[in-house]
Length: 177
Length: 342
View 1 (spheres, rainbow over the protein chains, first blue to last red):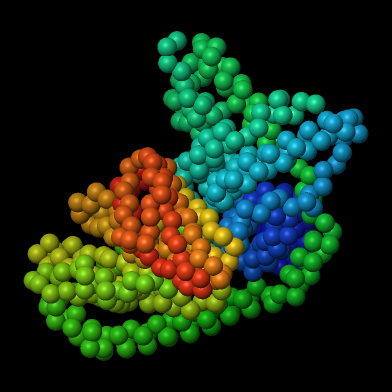
View 2 (tube, helix red, strand yellow; view 1 turned 135 degrees about the vertical axis):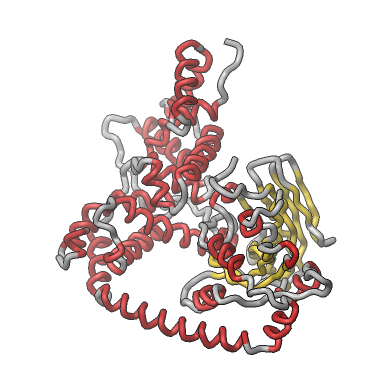
């Protein structure tokens, strides 16, 4: 990012490629819809380009990038009148060659239940889980990405975990062939 | 071991949400209590199902190429900065003109008379504006904002008595010009609301006043810790439900001034638009995440259908091709002056 700030126009392409998968993964889990996630993905990098000068060289790029993405995604979810759309079908599962069709079907079913559980969380709780659990950000980094205090992130996380504990399927029972 | 930890406590410990001492206490308990250890393991196993959603999402080359093309087609960042500079200059000029217009209006003269030799209550406004910068999330998910049915004048007339009798309001401050300028920013969602504030610097001359304010959906005057509350709604097709804040009383401005405020009263406007050709019933629910709250719906057409310790649900029937707007109030404990509070 520092190289881009200093005028290296190719540096941003490197950043886009480097963070494309984690960012799209995060946005897909947050928006629960692939097309919307891709729209926010593009807008996020446009904002990075426009606000490149605001990035502080002593800061970490990932929380800054995810902060932009989180704000855009939550705005986008607000605009969507019915945000309980199911996660898209485009995210194809790769069949495990070692699994029987019955095992694959059970796993697919379990995965759908987990998605549904995640989808039932309010957007900010979902963002907290996505940032800390899936993206591996620390709570202070997640707080920076969500524009709130560490205490608030922990509260959101605690509530999300409480809800998920109630509605997540039992992995062993449901996933068993 | 007589007492066990709850699932929530065990989860908080697993996900490192507890302070060091609490985490140590739970760890010590787990080493001795087989029952809690078993439940902790079961929870860990349950949450392992989340790993099914890990990975599996990769950005296509097409998406990356399109993104880079869009960036290339964008003007250089400096142009944006220049445009922003031009925009800010224009907005500042517009705000200055607005300030001049308002201070020379008959209303401004009236307020000056009411306040006699008092200075304009700018410091209170500034505190209120600081509050506006806090993030807010809780109510923007139900639809686009709409105009408030409670104008500042009405609030002033009905709820505000100035010291020494009479009623009045202040509709403008220098600081608010920032908000007015910001409201003209394109592609922004804004709620129009009314804020009640109080100038309590000098108790002998304490003044309350209301003024119109534009609240950005992402920067509304609600502390982040309030985001625990959740709105949900259900309605048939072609019926939309919007919830937005109309009035906030007893806010941090008062607390910061050391006023004895023990609760925050917020007026919400609900707008149900029935675009269908049939009568429709919309159901709106608010959960508070605590038991320390109160709510009132001063509208006979709105029926509270469920009310338990942490949640209230009400329904309203709307005629075909009409819009029903009503207000209700939530009463919550006031935010402590500093920190997130309990």
